[in-house]
Image 1 (cartoon, rainbow, N blue to C red):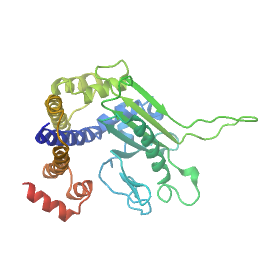
Image 2: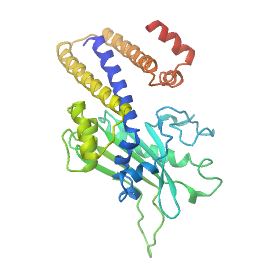
Image 3: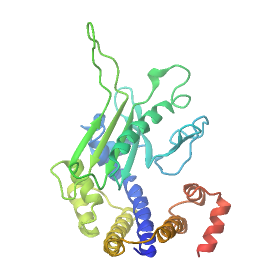
Image 4: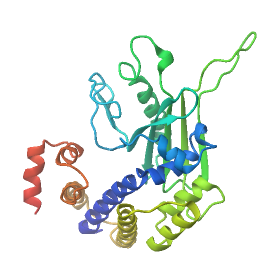
Length: 322
């Protein structure tokens, strides 16, 4: 297996994932996803839902420390005991009724779902963190009745075999164990796991995400379906994102195919070379973040934190790579 192929594939996947998150953040796209995942939006139109979306959508960027009040829509929770957790997309939406309320939404786009047990538990950890982090920010003192409902939507682009074309939902339930039963307010969170199929689906959400994220549908056909069947208004910026994402998907596939052939040929590779390859992957990851900074997709601050460097260290590495 050539180091060059691994570096190229690693960089392509990183860029592809970044463009997927950006594409998902457009209100035209979000409104369709939320229509089929948020209970309170089931009877609303796409336009009505778009008006409910807070314009401040954080995409894998703003750091939040558990005991510091920085920003309400932070995309990271960080504490000494918990370590670092990043949210792909995190934002607020309004639920229109006589007394409008806000709910918190997190969307995760997952390319690799092979470790499904870890991901299943991770989704529960995410909603737990989004609930507990509200104290001192969304509600004060012991006013727990003011906790905002949390939705966490997990989009698996390459689901495990047997899970394709399915939607799984997790939420708290109320069960009477002894005596006269009574209802309690358990409507605190909902986790939705969306396993995107390879082929188009009869389910509206699965079909929409299949068209949007499929690497088997070319860009122009993809845009045509989104416009005609889902009434998505594609502006110039979104048009560019779709084209870039499709080009990167082609690159990931081609490099993965070549890599698979080389893996079969070079099965007897020695440990020393493998260690060199691991070092090469680290360099490839750094180069990918440098490219994202130079393309204007990430800031220096965000990129340097992603690779656990100071801004000065990242700039120095960037100068050596180019």
